[in-house]
Every structure is written in structure tokens, then in C-alpha cells.
Length: 274
Image (cartoon, rainbow, N blue to C red; front, top):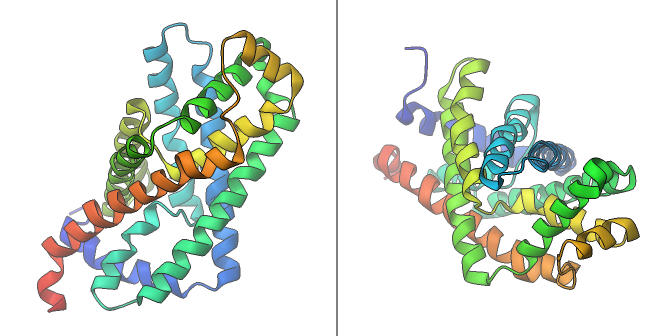
């Protein structure tokens, strides 16, 4: 058989999870920063590819087809992504890691992802990449940030659940593959589905909102966005957290840890843990 069965994936992830938790904090942060950079760069490419497509649905689909490159880099180049690491509940329930170890990983990986995302956001704004298409990319970025900062808590939470269910399914499928091409092919569709559906990914939003906040303070970008009818008043660091990142992160934890991790642990490993 040229792939691992779901039961084998569940069993194999125990060792993977133990390795993640036992990584030193320094290495964990470095790998997490890399993952934040990878996802942010996928966001840059996705937005750039789709912004000038006149029909919105076609543009969104095109961007969704580009974005899976981010998770491809995360999984194949080596890095630590918070949303995928919600699967650490599997070795936790097998009593191979502790709550303290899992929460430590989540905390430092989350911080590293945030640092990497903000680094790319600052680079993109201050190298004037957003001036592409006569500032059309800046308008699109600011419009996206404004919409995310105005999202009701419940809506952001549920979209976060849907998103990370698909992200963790993508990770799960990639772990089933035994070769690089199969891993890329396996993760592509779930990631494309979440992007084209407009679900909310906490690490992606670390980039999409922070780049909007930075762009807001560049006069030419702000003026172009306001001329296009974008309300920038809600694009703030406060709303970055309260209106989006907090509910989306909580939703991502439910979508990944509960809807994927707990389910597959219960189906494939629970009897062995008893």
C-alpha cells in the first residue's frame, strides 16, 4: 500500500506530537516564525493573483488555488503552525504528552506565527508591493482587513471552526501520503475549499489584518481605499484582537482539536488508551 491508512496516521501522529512538544522553546519559536512567514507569503500571492480579476467569484477561486502553497511550505520545508498543532490532543489523550506541554507548544507557536506574519506584513507595505495595479492591491487588502475587523464574534467563531476542520483534514491527508507529490495533492483541495468559502484562519488573519493596519497609515493607500468606499475606522489593533483573532482562534481550536483530533482519537485509538 502506497499510503498510510487513517488508523496508521493516528498512530504515527503520536510520535510526531511528542516531537513537537519536546522541541526546545528556541527552536519552536524559530519554526513558528517560519510558518507565519510561509502562510503570510501565500496570502500575498493569493491576493495579488486574484485582485485584478473582474468577476469576484473567479478571482476568489484563483486566489484559493494559490493559497495551498502556504501549507505546502509549512509541511514540507519544516515549520510549526498553530492551527495544525491543535491535533496535539491526540497524543494528549494517549497520555504521551501533558496538558502543560501541549499548551506551551500552542502558546509559543502562536506567538511565533504572529511574529512571522507581522514581519511579512511590514515588508509588503514598506517595499510598496501594494501599489501594484494602480494601488488596486492596497484597496483590496484594506477592504479585506476592514471586513475582518467588523465581523460579529459568533460569525468569526463559526467560520474559524469550519476553517480549521478543513486545515486539519488537509494535514491529516498529507500525513497519509508517502511521497511529496501525493502530500501536495492531498492537502490542496481542503485548503482551497476553506479559502474559496471565506472561512477564517487565525494565522492567515495575522497577516491579512496587520498588513491592512500598516497600509492604513500610508497616505496613498488610505486615500485610494477611501475613494473606493472602504471604511478604515475599524481597522485597528484593538479590533484585530477582539473582533477577529480571539473568536477565530477559539473556533480554530474547536475545529481542529475537537472536530478532527478528538474524533479520530476516539475512532482509532481510544481502546488502546483504556
